[in-house]
Structure formats: structure tokens, C-alpha cells
Image (cartoon, rainbow, N blue to C red; front, side, top):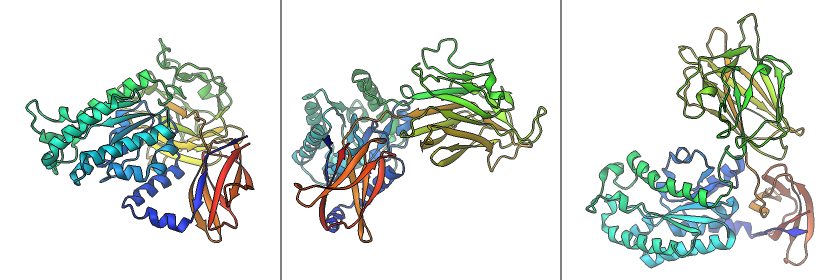
Length: 494
């Protein structure tokens, strides 16, 4: 029997009042609410920092192969990250933390020693709670509006670089020297009008420095931080004339729909992952497609031309002798305890009308997303946090979207990507205690599919069973009756 980490709930009102003393409390609460709506994968690279991190709008595009999580909050200093550390770092179990602070710290008048102490304290906390995690410290960037602290920034960055050399789990990105000319002058084109925050050119330079370091880290310290290349399935919906993954399927493996798309009961068994691993997953047709259209784009950067040039289609009005064709299929063999991400792609070039398709995915809950295939090159429509039925199935139905004005109301599907994250074993966490009338609600984060016993205590010696919990997802709210003003709670894995 294993006892997992405690959350101590003491004087809830006092805790809430204390938390309000930091001006960034609302930012952190927004992060927590976002986590409840859509829990991030536990293998995400965590980006922490001030407004330069917040404004990194191209972050996901810069790391298309990785799960990334932006938890920057504008105006913050390293001391603010320390203040909220328990709420924004250990619960994510990041294998790599990309950290950018110090800019506002020095500008506020703090000494080099004060700021450096915050960095070393942050490192100590990470090493204590996440001993396998690495930290990439991003150097303080120079900016024309803060020219008065340029020498302090240079000195601090050199000290930080030396600090990262003390451990193989610490890394340094030099975003100071490349932002100056060869003669040490500022480069105004790298900043927006305030000459402090980065312009598009500034972020392009920023990414050219940081991205290679992250990619090198991922190559040298293999962990599961990549997306579909390791935990995903790709399905090409098209004709037998254009099979994806051919002639060399060893790069990225695909599953090709050929003749079964025109069947009401055809199936494709033992789908393979993009790495070529055979799975128990299967695709089973429920209601057929009409046929294949081969007028898709050849210029997509998201998928190969073999997948984008053709799509299977449906239609409402009569076309090729068939009417009311509403394609439906299901993916079986999924884990009911696992959350999935489903991406849809289709392309039909050379048309002037709207050919929007609605993709409805049904499992434990129903979700839908819309995509207009007309002249589409790179747009992908995504549904996240999808849960299969208790039988491990997802049902996918195509129908005309509300903006579809084509005379035949064509619907299309060219490629489907199914992704999932393998859960990393971790301590169970109880987070966000809140009062609900006369009771207490505990937001529990633990491993989906696992069973725990919730226990309470008033003295950390005598423990009483509250209830047994089998987690249906990684995050659930548990009501607790007769809450005491001061109590302790823990989870015991059964």
C-alpha cells in the first residue's frame, strides 16, 4: 500500500487571503481553470517567465513535434515564480522547464545577488521535487528601453551561464549577445514600438537560438515529449491510387483506407502507430462514403501530398446515383481511462463555394468541430480531451457544416490523426480546496483508471476513511461533507 503526497488544507479563508497578496493571483487561477477544462499532458515542456514568454504566440509552431505548455505571466519576476511555485511547476511533471525571468527584476532595482538567489532557489526546488527534470535558463535579453541596465544584464547572464555549467541538467540559451550588433549596439528592428517587447523579427531570432537547444536536449536525453511520432495513429482517407507512407513507410507509418470506405461494414484492423507499432485499435465503417475525390492540394506542410491530394466524401443531394450519404465510422480498442486528441484534415481545391464539414465525435461525451475543405492547404480542425465509451469506442460522423452552401452539400475527410499521452506514474495530488455551502470540494489530480482511498485527519496521526475513488480522468472534483475548519487529507493507492 502506497501513501501518496498530501495536500494540507488549513484555514482555507486565510490561505485565500494570503494568496491575494500577490498581484498575479488571477493569472494563476486562470491557469488552474484551464487545467481543469483541459488537463495538459504530463510530458509537456513547461515555459515559465514574464511577458516575453506570454507574447510568444508562435510557441506551438516553433515546437510542432513537442507538447508545450506556456505558463508565463506578464510583468512577473523570478520571485513571483517562487511565490506560485507549488501551483505552476511540480503538478505538471515537466521533463524540461524553459525559464525566462530577470528582465523585470533588475529593472525594478533588485541587486544581482537578489535575483541570482531567486534563480538558485528555483533550481533547488525543482531538483527536490522533480529530480529528473532539466532546466533551460534563457539569458536576459537586452532592449533599448532598458539601456541603463545593460551592463548589469551582461554580468548576470555571465554568472548564470557559469551556474549552468555546474550540472548536466542545467542549460543556457544566449539571447543576449545575438540581440546586439558586432559593435555592441542595439538592433531596434527586433522590438515593437516600446523598444522592450519583441517584434516578429525578434521572436524569429529568439526561436533560432532556443529551438535547436531544445531539440538537442530531446535527442541527448530521450524522454516522451514528442507528439504523434511516438503516441499516435495516422489514417489516410483516400483512393488506392495514392497511399501514404509509400514507398518508404519507415519514416512515418500510415494506415490507408482503400476499398472499405465504400462499405457499410468494412474494417481496418491492427492500426499501426506512426512509429510502426502494431496496436489493437481498429477502424470500422458504420455508414459508407460515396467515393474519393482527387482534387486536393499538393502543397500542404502538415501532411504528405499522398494524403492531401485525395479525400473520401459524402453528400446530401444525389451525386453519382447516391443521396443522403452521411459517412460514419468508429475507432475501437481504445482505453476508456485515456484522453485522446483527434485532428481532421481535408482539401478540395479549385472551388468557389463553402464546403464545410462538421465532424462529431461521440464517446463518454459528444464533441464536434468544423472544417471548410474548399481550397484548404494547411488548416487542421482539432478536438481535444476526447474520452471513449466504456467499451473503448469513439464514433465519428460527418455532416455538412452550418456554413456549407455547396449544391450537393459535400463533406470530406482526407486525413485523421489520433493522439494520446502515455501517463507517467506520479504522486496523487489534491488541489484547489474550496467551500461549497456546508461542505468542502477537493479538486483531485491523480492517475486515470487507478483506485484510491481518500482519508482525513485532524492531527496527521489518526486517519479516517472518507471514501474510495476510482479516477475516471486525471482530474476530478470530489465533494467532502462536514468539512472541518482545519483538516488534512491524503490519498492512499489501493
